[in-house]
Length: 91
Image 1 (tube, one colour):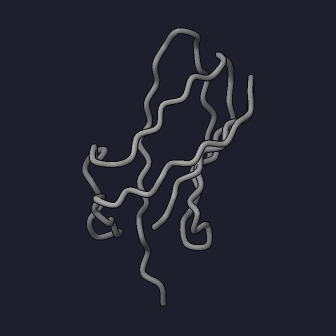
Image 2: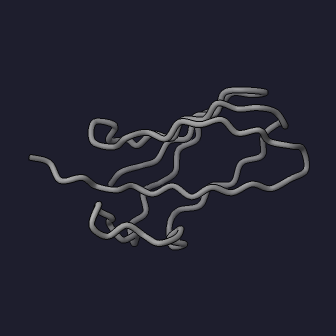
């Protein structure tokens, strides 16, 4: 099973790892979800306010393209983001 790892670098740096989702549907390029599939593993993290460079990787980094982005997080607010893995056909 593939785990998702979230690396935050900014006002504080940390790496969090989500356990694999055993009941999640497997997505391919032919069956992408129309919105966030709400049956996955959830992680909640409290971080200091500030600007963060974010990288979301999988434990199988050889076949999954990582997400890279910047988040500007304010104090006292809640934010959410949805990540899921899309399996590509290997030749």
